[in-house]
Image 1: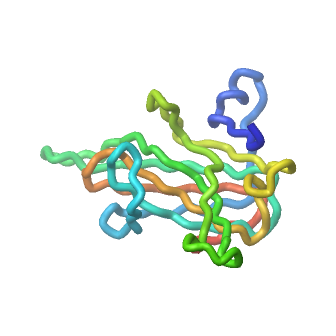
Image 2: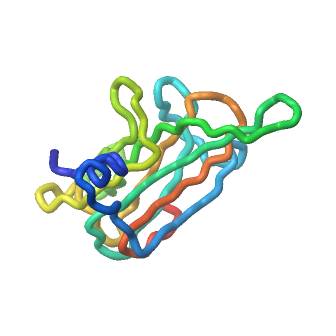
Length: 168
């Protein structure tokens, strides 16, 4: 696979190496009621959208999302929930005069076909495929879901060795 996708900690723990550190991070707290929704679904569940750009040319980025919800019991408690997400690169193809103006290329996801999930993933640059490369100014989107209609509060974290900016 052209893009190296590592489940966070998988190789760092197995090989005795320390987990990679990044010099920049963007952390956003997003409540379900204020999150941007998308018409694309993950396993039929509502998905939410987070867009970002990278200012420089990083070797890798790390993306993670956490979710919590309040219980319906008294006293209320905040409980964690699994979040499933997909990271895509957005490519402008409007110059080709097609009906579709953008192409979304899957860079990584934090779950398997059996719904095994990891809280974060690392996506590395590809020199062999321009659609999978991490370039300055490119637009990226994260589609995420907790596969439930509970009132979640999500924490989205993007880490990189280059500055990260929120928005399309």
